[in-house]
Amino acid sequence: MDSAEQEEVLQIFKETGALLEGHFILRSGLRSAHFFQCARVCEHLDYVTRLVELLIPKLPTQDFETVVAPAMGGLVLGQEMARQLGKRFIFVEKDENRLALRRNFKIANGERVLVAEDVITRGGRVQETLDIVESRGGETAAVAVLVDRSAGQAKFSVPLVSLLELEFPTYEPTQLPAHLRNIPAIKPGS
Image (cartoon, rainbow, N blue to C red; front, side):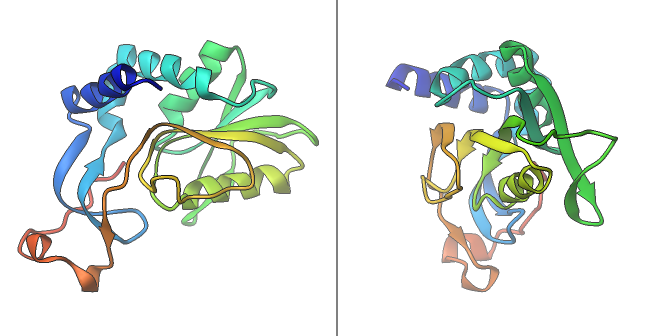
C-alpha cells in the first residue's frame, strides 16, 4: 500500500473515533496506551466498503469459496469482504468462552476459506478460527486483517495480509511504564 492509501486508512480510523489513546486492557490481558476500536469504523458502512476495497488487492489469492470471521470483531469486515468478492460468509462465535462453529454452519471437507478479522495483537482468535476450519476438514487460503498490532510478529500457517501494520508497545499489568500507572485501565471491547 502506498503512503497515500496508508494515510487514508489512518484518517478513517481517526475520523470515526476508532483509534483511541489512554490505558487499555487488551483481549490478551496485556496493557497498551493505544486501542483500535474497529466497531466504531463499522458504524459507517461506506468506510467499511472503502477499507475492504483497499484490502482485497493485497490478498495473495482469491481461490477460496467462503469467508470466515471470528465474532464479534470480524463480522462486518468479513461480511463486506464476502459481498465484494461474491463469496459465502459464515462466522465463529463464543461458546463457553471458546470460539465454535454454530448455527448449523458447515465447512465441507477441502473447502477453501479466507479468515477475516479486524485487529490482531497476538492473533489468538484468528488461531482458534484456523483450528476450527482445519478440524472441519477445511483449508485456509489466507488471513486478512485491518490492523496488525504485532508489527508482523503474529505468525500463522497461512499468509497474513493487513491494511496497517503498527507496533504500539504492550505491557504486562505488573510491568506498566510510569505514564500508564496513574491512568485507570479500561477494557473498551473491540
